[in-house]
Length: 574
Image (cartoon, rainbow, N blue to C red; front, side, top):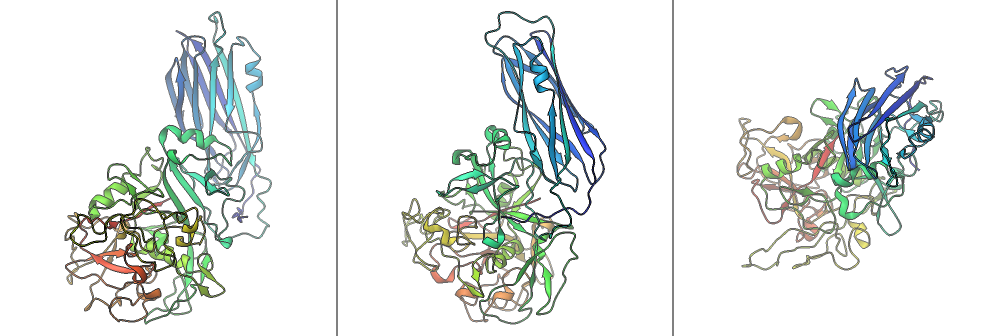
């Protein structure tokens, strides 16, 4: 079971959320009032952040709004018997203390008053439900006009619903706390786990959602807009249909690591990792044996608690990008088009408008690589196993054919870490997808990890070298100028292609080189080509045909041009 970070301050305040609903018929109107009252401080703050209309049957919303984040008003017309309307309400705990629902009042009283043909229901929130610090919850209020009603009431009907939130009594600061930053779940992201058959189900974020000690990394999905609200209010254990899922993500929590090779060469070894919080003093080591907060957790000028990393390579199309298993990876886009495609996921369509979706940076790849080669990934008592290759090629593998090296099929695995390529494939080999033997190609050796980091398609990153005078080298990437610095890692050039002296601590390049020999100079004999002026962009991981040369620590170069075997990966920052 995961260990939750407890808050340090206890305040016995109470937040009462009042929902008032007035029902009208035909020319009459119905008004739903939601008010948040009580003592609210920076430590205990419950408020409304969103109202969305749900299914409306022969009914019309006249008005809906949130005022000062504590009052929401709805007005709806019901046209005839059998009419109904529903609203999804998001309540968010922006304080520092976990809360729970202490009481819900007013529903039974309203339903027992005339006209009894008009009834109200509440779904997605119950007494004792928890609302953790920095978490949000969605619930549904529905009004229904009985289809058997034979007359139109002469008066409207009101609902005043009071939901009282109080401090969670289990939030005890005297307990030993974990330094792991909890995954940030907001907007439309759905936390998930997997059942015994590998099927995706909604997680209980207050139960056994994740355990990094047991290599169960936190997972979440983005779902379609027409299914999202129902999943948001669903109980833990509810199956999430694959057809509703748009993207899979894995949480990489903020951590520091112990430096072992600041300037030199090293062999494969377990990387020492310790999780830390934003409130922990940042580690700034620069010598072997010292500790360094991984640079990927500084996003622009902001220190972040972690980030969500695409579980698979990009899939879908440029206009409709996805992150799905058992699909062709998204290739044949230059760097700029791939960047724009991934940025488009930062929208209501994906339920990610409150995140920052972007194309993977070199440093973010490095953060995942180091966590993979730690005790939380593929290392046990100092002995590390390489992530197995995705060796599936949808191309022919034959010269003088239309597509020699095509997209991969995401979430597949070969029979070893360096298996030979499988050409002309339209799916994973039988039994070797992400739910079955394919788990050996994940960063954890189980379904909770990240796939396609070894082999698959080359993954271009938002990182490139600059010219000797420091000017940007877009070449064939499609960019005309420097990208925003928070989305881009810049490197200085070197004198020869196997020299990684200008690599940076944390990017899984310089620290994981075994030599300056050509080609296989990285850990596990992975590729090691530093970019050059004519091909300044970094690519990671290798492709399906790279056998032993591909891997999590593989590095190569690109002009940034589109290619049938050139893909990428998405990251969302909280």
